[in-house]
Amino acid sequence: MWPSKKPSCSSCSSSSYSYLSSSIFLVPLVVVPLFMVLIFTCSLLPQRSISLSWRFGNALSSLSSHPVFSTQTPNLELHAAQVAEPPIAAPTTSYEKALHRPDPDQSGAGKQEKVVKKKESSRLNKLETTLARVRSSIREAARSVRNLTSIHEDPDYVPQGPIYRNANAFHRSYLEMEKHFKIFVYEEGEPPIFHNGPCKSIYSTEGRFIHQMEKDNKYRTRDPNEALVFFLPFSVVMMVQYLYVPDSHSMESIGRAVSDYVNIISDKHPFWNRSLGADHFMLSCHDWGPRSSSFVPHLFSKSIRVLCNANTSEGFNPSKDVSFPEIHLQTGEIKGLIGGISPARRPILAFFAGRLHGHIRYLLLEQWKEKDQDVQVYDQLPNGLSYDLMLKKSKYCLCPSGYEVASPRVVEAIYAECVPVLISDGYVPPFSDVLNWKSFSLQVKVGDIPNIKRVLMGISQRHYLRMHRRVKQVQNHFVANGFPKRFDVFHMILHSIWLRRLNFRLGD
Image 1 (tube, rainbow, N blue to C red):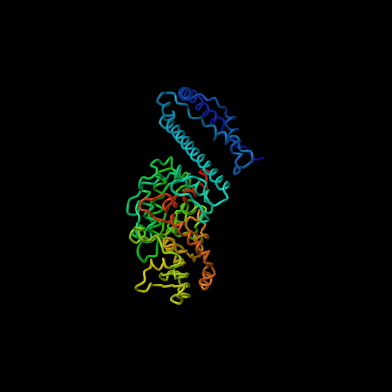
Image 2: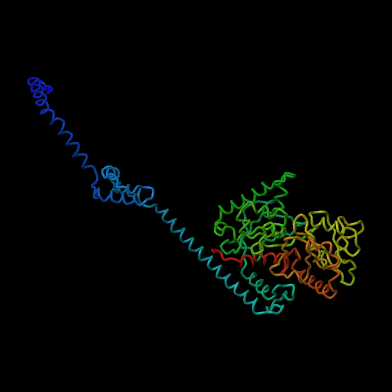
């Protein structure tokens, strides 16, 4: 065996004795002060009434229920140490209580917000209840009368005849519009781009409508809470004039202006966000009107877009968008434009004069330009011929689309009591929800341009005279009066917007 190595007994016992003897005196000096400090510290701590096992059990159950945590049994001592921190003591002084008490202003604001929302909901329900009764009334009018004349009394005009899809339903709807339709015009924005537009030229209907809505009329309300629709009063024509950089081929500046305007009114007012723009409408007679709306997705897809360029191939949706007429007013007045001569004194079968704009006009001019005395087609009218007189001397007026589908020649033909011949692809004529265009106009497919003369010659004199009479009758709905009159073009535009509002229930 290896010898054991033990310390010397004498040296070991001597050192131990000296250490013990000195420790006896040091223990009281160290332990007693520590004990006093511990007692004092414990007296300052808050009392704990939550057991360690309860707190850990809750922590474990909450963690184990989460899918990212392991289901293995955790180390009890480790987790107990982590979760056993004392809760924050409840405030004891009045100052501390005040810090933890809910702010009375905030609490009041919350209650006030609830009251406001409740009132708004009540107002909307009231409006929608009214519209529900209106829809029922119009449906009843559409069912109750199968003939072509309205049964409603009216001192100014009673719709009748085949120019209407349903004369009685239209009249009932128009009368309901006069009672209930209210429009709020946003006041944000400054002229010339906002609250302004051209009242002359080919875009006159855009400017005239904006100016009419700026005036106090029976349809405009200053209280947005009673409005059924909201008007965005910007003019795309004026944006093109003031914002577009010539030859840049970029609409960014116009799109940014439209987007910024919608952002401003949606930040300042609650109405756009409430419906995502569904009860808002814009109006434009410029070719770029549809494209300008595309810079705001909800404006394009949800809002009511009142457009001259009503092209279904470019996103025009007849169930929510409105087609309205393009009217060329060179002087801003309609004097001398309306009226024609009798059918017996119209020697020209068909007439068109216009520049080469777009492929449809190219086909028309290529086929018929200065080639036939019955179908007189010009790219530029010869000297000595009056454009207006040529319209009034023609039985049929050709209305081909240009670069875009809309053409002022449709209304020019109606004013001259010349039967319009629409030649287009994807065009939705104005007020098609009310007017039966087939009863007073012709629609010729682009592929039938070479056959125009044969098509027109095949129409009997009797049928032509019927269409001529109906053109004179429908004329009233396209007249742009300086002071709007019932059933004129201004009110027909309003009625088309009114119908689109009836197509949906706010909140659906």
